[in-house]
Image (cartoon, rainbow, N blue to C red; front, side):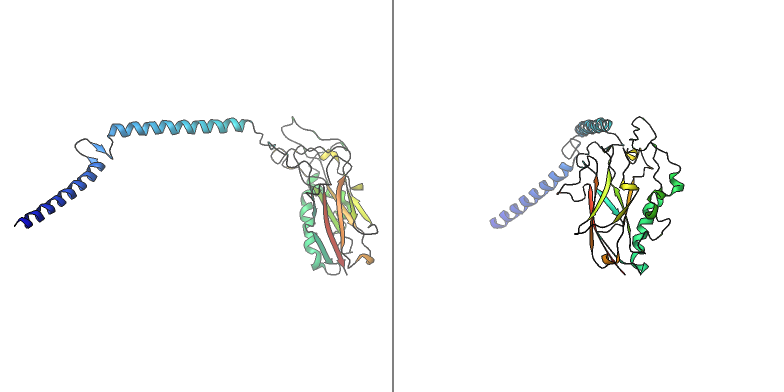
Length: 285
């Protein structure tokens, strides 16, 4: 009998602990005697929520004020820092490091001449006649002008390399035209008289023709005021026609073009595109 009594007492104790445990969890979630929810009264929850609302509202206000002050120091037309681009690079069209084609097969070079036609669409005379005639050899400074004017650069200026008298840009006759342009840099005003000069890396010189004359990049196209302030701006182009002969066919010609005659750099070994560009041409028939 004693053993049974002890067993019943243990079971009652176990049940009592179980009930107390369940009751404690229920009271933690909501205690009807004190009106607490998750250990806090409604007033306590209200105060802590008010504190965090004020705290995070203050942080958000500080962040917004800081961003507003920073934005007041920025000019939407000019980058805050341009130190990475001290001098512009040069690029060519057709856009290819190696230009190889058979002059007797138009399918070999049609994609090259299409790139040139696409580039020159914005330079069509009918479009450029809407732009301004600027003073040759003088910077076109417009710092205080709300609307920046654009200086004319007509496609016809490129003459034999304009794609007008010869839609094949010389590819059909095996004397291709390469168009060179300088990357845009906001505010750039090159000193001196900048021009493009190309040389072939071989023992004998390679005859070339430049359009415009002497490959000049006239200063009237500088400075550039950025995409927002100068949306219709067109940069000056230089076309070089490679006067290859039959003796030059089937031989890869390496040509390097540099911007010279000014303070623009063209000799940085760390950046082969800074003020210069190198490409290869191979013509067969």
